[in-house]
Image (cartoon, rainbow, N blue to C red; front, side, top):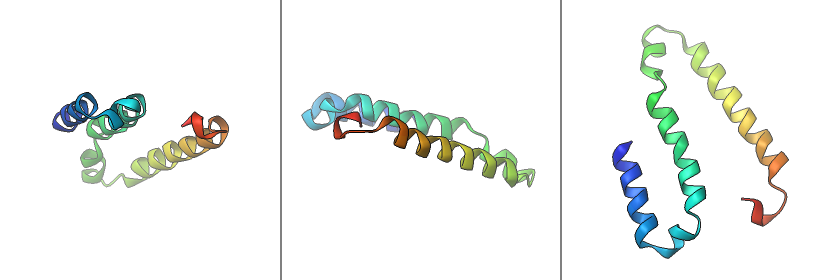
Amino acid sequence: MILSLILLTVLVIFFEGFRQDRLVYYLTSSMLVGNAFFPVWFFQGMESIKYITLLNISARGIFTIAIFVYVKTQADY
């Protein structure tokens, strides 16, 4: 995770195309941090897959609804 964030920062610093949309890249990389700290291995070991499933479905549902609510034009990315 740390290596990926460092690589993203290097790309944003040295490439204009990444620099223009740096906010999008950094906000999207917050999902990386969330996935790194969510203990999927623990719930798999405890055979409690329903918690992982419920969390994934609810997070993806909220994300999908937010896209339709907040993104109205191309500039709203």
